[in-house]
Length: 202
Image (cartoon, rainbow, N blue to C red):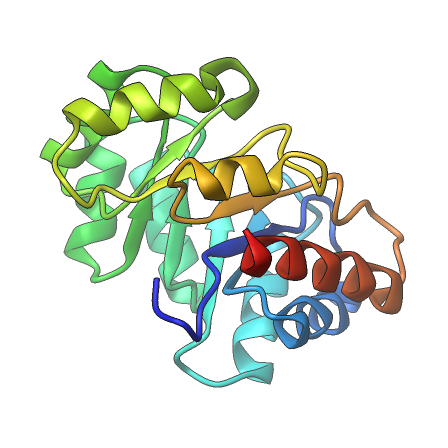
């Protein structure tokens, strides 16, 4: 990551289209690098469309919990540039790459991580990171190709984010600690700013 980016991804699970733009703007303004709207949110692709339309084309706007190649195509049509999955499916990764989007599949073992890289993934989501652990991530880094971006997701919060950063994480996905349905944008923005501060000081 360069000095301008943080690698932090806001996971806006449960956000509605009516709230999506304001919440996304709050986290982008705080310094988050990307937002992700999981596909098990209310009308998620409409939220992706609205977030994409509201900001610059180079913003990383993602769809999450992407499980099938058809989901990838629907996310692309909505304007997503980032495709995040909880698992490692080569056909999902391949379709993401074919469409020129960024693939970040979830892996819980080095075997899954290698399979994801072989399929064309650009980064690996450690999921759940609370199970892999920081020591586990360090061990993965010793055998995966140099420079592989590892992004912990699941249980990351302001209390442990610095530890992940110091251990070499390329970023982190932050979900319920940052956003829960109904949270006001100013509250989410304040949490996001604190997370960015912790990350940048680590």
